[in-house]
Length: 90
Image (cartoon, rainbow, N blue to C red):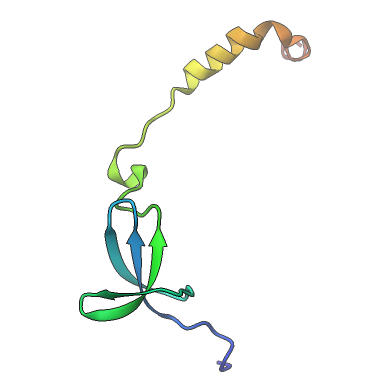
């Protein structure tokens, strides 16, 4: 491999700011901050969402009622779709 063209691949602490969850993984991300974690100093990356706080992974995800939204749209704008109705009727 050529020297000097590859980013440094090292251990980095990712800190989820929403629930104070921290984890160590390897990354090439550039950071200015460092943190003491488990007795060792690591570069720090602050996150707004991680697997510990994201609704998909925590099971608190809301399912949208798409059928209700479509019916509401049709009730509101249904009479204005003249061109769409004639194309669908053919």
